[in-house]
Length: 75
Image (tube, rainbow, N blue to C red; front, top):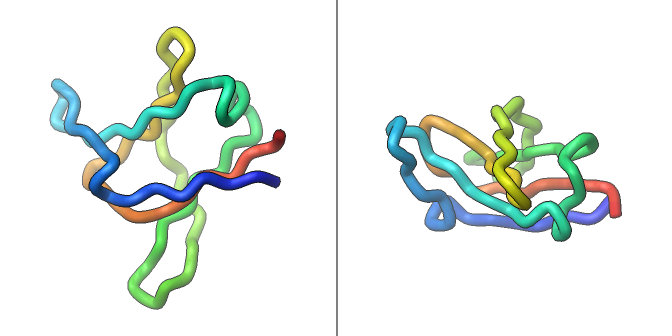
């Protein structure tokens, strides 16, 4: 599996006061095998069930607050 790391600074607050992070579909696939992991205080990754939204050619990770983490996906 491939991965992309991100930081909490990459998130943007949307109109619903949620934080979202977007990726192009051609970068991470259609999202069917997308795994979102958050980096915890111990420096370990833990899987989170983050809502995903698709719009045009982007997939958005939605969360109530920004976090450091990574996404795992099939290439």
